[in-house]
Image (cartoon, rainbow, N blue to C red):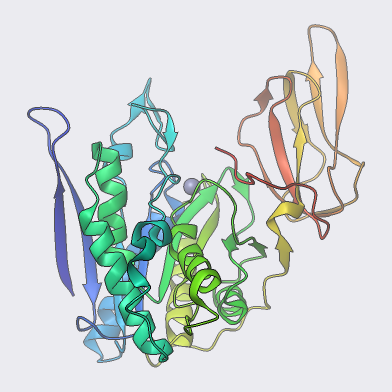
Length: 371
Ligand SMILES: [Zn+2]
């Protein structure tokens, strides 16, 4: 293993922050896999999974089983990690701008612009190399406007040329699930069977250019633009993996989840000697089919159903009690399908989002991610 650091430009006199990645395998070996945790800096399930994964990678390297190059950035967001407000971690949004740390990544296809016109040829592998080099040049040419902006660009300078990018997150109270594009159904299937995720939410453009999509969408965009003249593969599979809920942080779960990641790394050829994927495939649903239920009034939320339950559109899945008006109202399931996540807080304001149910029918379009 080797370690690289990148000091961020200090935003304020007397302060300094550093991005750190640990790397297993020889530089340039393929497949190149990039994993990061805690981009939302208040989400520790992915970060503790990476802690245990790093031990498994040490062992694999010690036994000569590292075939590809695996990068791990266990704490991708040193800015967010320091954001505690009134004794609570506030790691999802940048407190300076209240912008989500997992949005606004650079659009690599737009950044390379017309520059590929004269460089691409007939060989898809050569085109992949040319495009990755163009991404690197484009990222190097960006002048960051802020420390957070710089962090986004530096992370992508480490990840833009990876074959596989996994961004490890968690939800509030949830089943293990992940978000991926439709570009590589073979790897979507493998990721589910290796990790035991219970649901794959599929969408090509979710809105906001989250970290995972910033790696998969450019290949689709470039294929749409140049694909009739030059062969361009879907050269990066990326996914946001939600390691259950915010409080699902323990070594037993994390060791099992790290073993799932080693299984995945084995299945894609990054390590040898890993066990074969043994979980059933994760059911795939369109992200636009993830119906959202909203609070009919403010009050106390009690749940009749739990993440993991199959529910029917219209059935009462929770209650909101207003003890002042002495009125209790039902929360209706927004779709027929799998209740896969709900909010953490047992109190709510009128109109707040309370949970999501993954159905088969598209209910929503446009900007599909909550901020
Ligand atoms: Zn997150």
